[in-house]
Image (tube, rainbow, N blue to C red; front, side):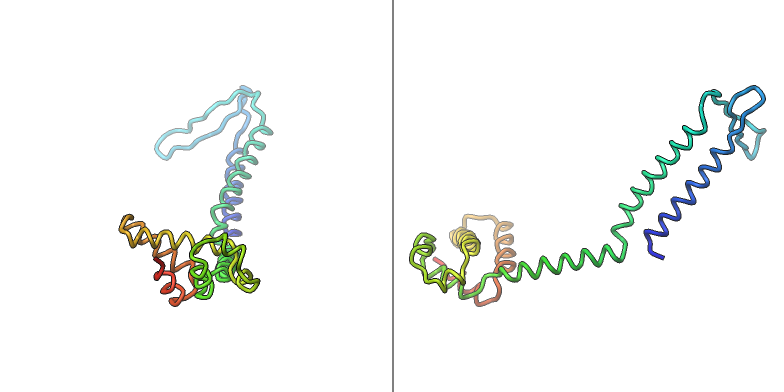
Length: 186
């Protein structure tokens, strides 16, 4: 049985027990609603409620509590459901595959360096093949990485920034050849 179903059954059993406790309310001889509470070491004690309290209101209240508990339990257990975990895994794989399409290659870095970091020259004089190879988004990604590398070479950044840039370079570039070519920037 799925863990969500087990949790729902558990909440249902709990609420049935609570309804049984609510139905243990009896109308005493003096017209008051009475819940009898048994203590293990003492006599029976009773709590008295005003007779205008309707059992219907108590049942509605219990239904609302049941609905809220079932919703919260469903939200909590959804993270552990095998179907939900599989769906998250597939979504993660698709996002990684989509990112892999946009990884920057050595050829794209060489085009970037050919135009000496000047996007105006690229957009005005690049061949159609070069424009098809390197998109404007990829150009700006390479440009941001190149700017960060130049700051690192000048020694104007902290160690945490160096680590962050290194991680971004590994995430954005397809292979070591593209990384080596980008690191030659001056």
